[in-house]
Length: 162
Image (cartoon, rainbow, N blue to C red; front, side, top):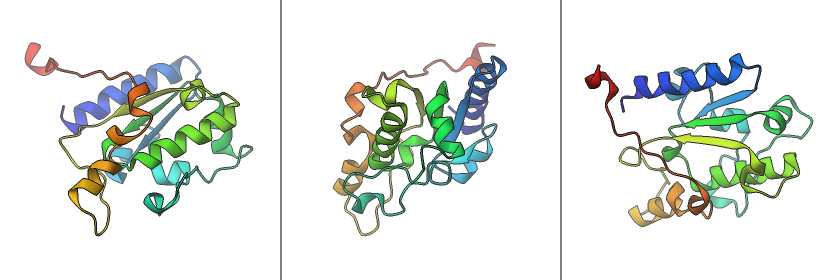
């Protein structure tokens, strides 16, 4: 799916949820993708992720529970993460640890709904001075969380169908 069309679909989800007076957090792995989402911010900026994720054993988001973002993570109905395939698996695991802690819930992502969007045929995580094997091990599909996620694939090009 083209990035602009994909961003429009995600923005439609965000608008629908927000129109029902619910909180929806929009994040993206790149600045350009974040600007295409209504209220979007980069993942590192919004979640205060450590810059050296790959060197941290069990990273968490550097957010306090009582901060504005801490309260958003505790109460939001959905977190939409665009271009997640560009991120290191430890970024997803840091979000999981943080949301579980903030919500006091041991279920995956503290029971919060997370919508991950991206294309694994595009950019994988970039690791300085790494081998292709290192990059595959950093990929979201290598995360312990991956087997717990429900995967959906959009296959029909709706622009052609009209």
